[in-house]
Length: 302
Ligand code: HEM
Ligand SMILES: [Ca+2]
Ligand SMILES: [Ca+2]
Image (cartoon, rainbow, N blue to C red):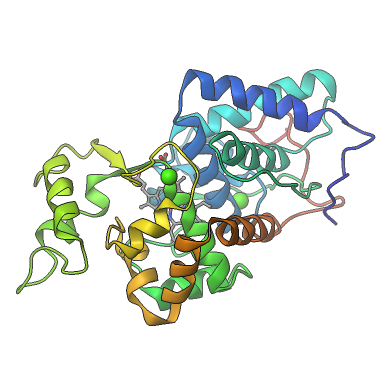
């Protein structure tokens, strides 16, 4: 069973140790912030929040090698690996990699200007990490509202949670390939998605010309790309949602009111985001004697 005080006697400094490593890593590179937050999400949606995504395989068939995970930025993995190494100095073999990722994901939000909140701890690290188990478990950027709701519902997250968590797209980068269809090949009658603000569409076409280098990435929040705020929802109202999966949250009447509420009331967004992050952190967790406490986050204990 998870608890906010899980390590209060076994490793009382764990949260301050992780926070220090995360802050240091952010000082080196901003990408740490979005990379760590997204890593937490992708971990929890496949096998539960158990650090399965961090396992490295020499055969290229671990979870991180699945196509949906290839765009996870290395700085997220590096943050967890570095924080784990620091925690092992004080409390060897006590704190799971899954909990370190949970703490780090919480910390990057606060360090990007977002809300601070408590996290539940006591997760154990999983014993399965397979590329073949990823497909179908992560949302795709062309999903509609029903598809988004379905995949989040499988993880005990409701529509409000899904919308709040999508607010993570207030930070970070996306590769042109993930939304180029909305600029160049939307439909026979309209190559540009009519739900895209035309000025924004033009900016996107400049940043992402047709057949651009697939390595090129742009800010997902063009207004405050480095701040965790509710600007994502204001963008949606202004028809500046980057992916179809962002845009539908506003264009579908079933979710529009929540988007408008989050755009107008940052406190409501923060509250819903915190609640949803805590729920996300409970997905498929292993506790008690299940799984293990990994020594090296990138490898199962042998
Ligand atoms: C609702 C369904 C979601 C879809 C379809 C989706 C899809 C994507 C895609 C396609 C990218 C761009 C990847 C790239 O091109 O490199 C991305 C980036 C990102 N996503 Fe999501 N995502 C969703 C929900 C979430 C959630 C729930 C979180 C976290 C709570 C999250 C956090 C992020 C972050 C922080 C980035 C930027 C990563 C970076 O800069 O390295 N996303 N997402
Ligand atoms: Ca996992
Ligand atoms: Ca922002």
